[in-house]
Length: 327
Image 1: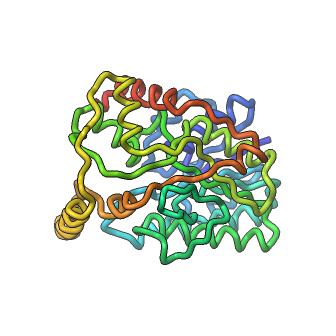
Image 2: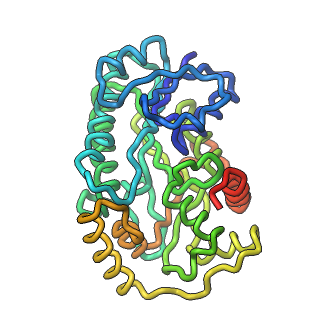
């Protein structure tokens, strides 16, 4: 069985590739000609150079494959070119699903995000069924992923054997960019976190998130969504765990939300003029207004998703960032 993976050089995608290889699967990885291949170094994978928007290239790349994992996405809290993000996240998803349908694959797993789901915002956990609309989405990343998920669902109605997974906030090794959450860990290790906002996240080990994708392929119901998450933790709790792991003092000052939001608006305006990434991404601050807590019970019950202590994942992330020169 040959498996096609998009986004294989990224954080989640590279972990999916590793889990597939552990299972003895043959992997064909879609990579752009300009992609950083560090996350695939030394792995026994077939490299397929191409692009999400190259329909004919995707058709050729998927030939001979039985399963597709579409994990590629433009994941940034800020971009000067929002149209490019929509082209990749929405248009790219449509192109990949069309190619999958034409190749008659046995199963497709689409990596969405908990950011596309409803969230009560009051500390209660959202589920796959919590009501949500496009108007609830904050920033171009969430909006583009929400629209991409709607496009993917159209292919289910057309007979594509698709399962959707909604990862929460994975942490662990191979976070090369790093992701916004990885950057928080790196800044903490550099002692650049003097204060914090009162917010919360759902964390999961990236390895368990990747394994959850495979479980969704093998055990998931076609057309069903599964939250791949684990522990709901306040940002203060996360910093406390990092203090225990590293000995670096956690920030003790809690910032008031409104001044930080104002600073983010000003920072965003300046970035649109200079083209430089803002120090305080507006979308990130707006998201922080609510505790992004989610319930992964469906994935635990139906898929057998593991729920090991996230402190272990944070330890692996810290060790990897340090070993690879991020601090």
